[in-house]
Image (cartoon, rainbow, N blue to C red):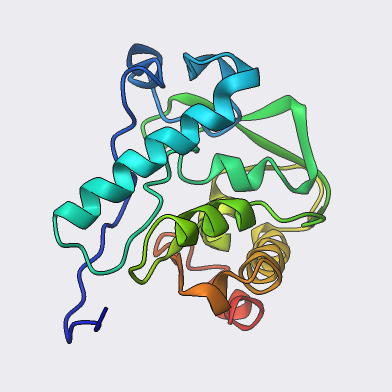
Length: 205
């Protein structure tokens, strides 16, 4: 399929079907730590159900004429928490608490050791996507500034040092999972995290 001069794509997550997620639970706030209870399907069948919902999203995008197809982030509880909680250095049993810009307390990943990516996180998702569309495809990855801002740092000297290691993890995921070679990866800077922005640019490139 010839790529258009101005190719279209979908930014953000695709709506997850009501038979897959508890929308009332999700409406209470964006989960920054794992929220297994939001899935309506038993864990033994969850991966299969997520695959089915992902195919529905892929076909919907194709019918709409989208040029670059994503997986819709159907398997994620939020944009960043799936990747963040898959890394070493995060205590998933005892999350941290931070206050958002409105003063509300939010549970977030608690950083207790060096951030390291020890296994692929999005590789299977990208492979599944490529098997189920003949169009150019992309997968999304959270940026290091978003990850650092949405975490409780109890290990690193400062947010800049934390963002640098998150950048290394994101870079490793994009490269070692073959995401870059398959089609494309989408990651984002966070304009509100100006303190870490200049130095983390190197590891993420």
